Length: 281
Image 1: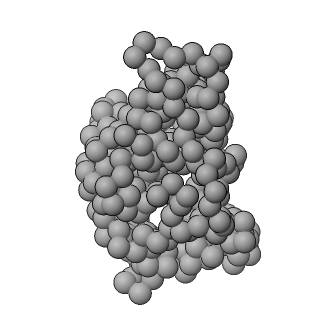
Image 2: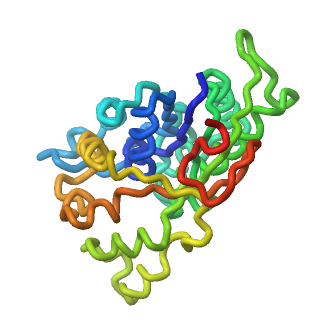
């Protein structure tokens, strides 16, 4: 088996953070597995005339959308970790007993360890400690994903279950939005998040400094697939979302590269890298 396992919080995150990488490695013949922690049922509903009528069906709708999005990217393997969308911090959904944010860390890690042993990836991607932007489910993906990467090695805490084989991935990466990429996005962003702040300064300091990025993957050939996959998330991604309105001359710079920080590797590979499988192939 081997290949890549990419762990995400909600349906649509897999495209926004790693859509190009998923499509690229699927096209190159690697086994690509996406694991989604939650059902995405607390997300906003776009592109429907009566969104409130769909709220009780949203988990089912979003499950269909992520399958459609992964089909666009050429990704065959998908798993849900089995938790409820936690919503934003301080909301009622965040304290729901089935929410990912409320999950027992050991149990959630055990579930992901089972999937690691089932799919046997060589490479894993998860989020950074801030979850990219502070959403509780994204922070929890970091905690659980990092714990499972190392925990699957420990047969004391996570003994083999029936028919399981020992497996330990070789490389762990955190998704990273580079500062140069966020500055490129700023040219097309038309929805101020902090209207009281200086917008120019806010964008200038956002993202991971480029010198701290270890790995940049060229996904310019996959941009059109990434856009199609975004549109497949109909309930979550507005039809006029800014990333879908970037003019041709800006598409490659904004969407044509995906960046990571390499956190751990059992194989030698000089930095910076341009391939998640560097040292393995």
